[in-house]
Length: 119
Ligand SMILES: [Zn+2]
Image (cartoon, rainbow, N blue to C red):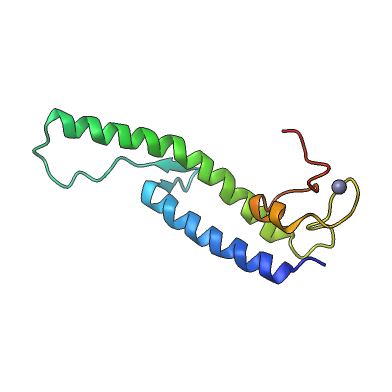
């Protein structure tokens, strides 16, 4: 039997960490519900070219990281929503329990290791 309580605790903890990381990098657009990277706050006005370049690079990396974190957050939220269903944590092909390690790596997993989805 899967320890759903343990999985739920793990998921909730990871969700909180993810949201904190995402808040550092951007903010959610209330109109679309999508997360957008925000440029670093300009704390001081006298910046030279190098500083500007650093800041841009940082913004670029935020922009590319945010969708990755957002996708992970979505899969965690979906898993949390479906965790109380009987089908949660069971392989949709063989109906056996999905390995704990696999669920930890991908809480939205719908198949066991043997029936790993090719995606
Ligand atoms: Zn299976």
